[in-house]
Amino acid sequence: MSFRSDRTLPEDQWLETETGRYVFSRLERLILDLVLPATGETLLDVGCGSGNTLRLFQQKKCVLSGLEESEIALAAARKKLGNRCELVRGSAEDLPFSDNEFDVVTLIAGLHFAKNPQKVIAEAIRVCRGRIFIGFLNKNCIMGTKRSIGRLFGFSPADAARFYTLSDVRSLVKSKMAVSSVRWGSVIYLPGPFYTFFSEFEEIFPMFKNPLGAYAGMVVPVRYTYRTVSDPLLDSFDLKTKAPAAAPEAISGMLKEG
Image (tube, rainbow, N blue to C red):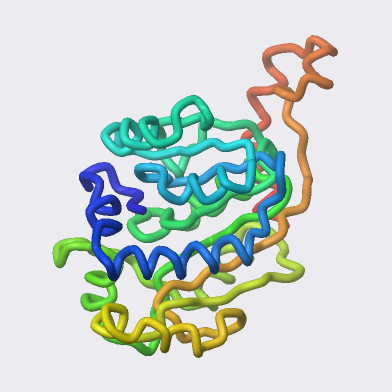
């Protein structure tokens, strides 16, 4: 689930553990219940790692794309997903996709190690025409220190993962566009040892509108505001090459004004 290029498939090692499998199952439920993916929707997972979260949406028959910086992780994702997903190497701060290209954009782990989270979110908004899922490690969780939470999610002690509050993430989104409503929730409320012996206690806590879990997720609707010249409808007019050159700046300006 890493977004960094120097991590060598820690998510797959993590998922080999009993705790990792259980924690991932809780993330899966939160993500799917918030995103509500529909058959045929186009979906981009930014920071897709080795493809484990993409497989969640594959089960829902979405049309999938994934972006990741690490070629090693992409190779692993290709083995898992084959030709059923478009996988692209690139940076979340400069997505190689057209404006409004995807129904859903997910940042499941894209903010954990982002150097410029504002830019990451701005790019996610730019390429989306429906809704964005933003997942993050919760600064206000109740279950332990940042280091202990990092271990629970499979990070090594050397990993400097970013933590956010719900207010932080709302502010990041609001700095790029107007926000009418959001849906949110969180999971993972207990210290690591509980998930080996007493995982059933986790499900006592409500998942939605609960700010106390170690991993939080937020779904934000995106207004369809701009159609790029890459659209087949506009391509048919044989627009001059100068016109598309201004498109990224135009949409960036519109997002900031919103």
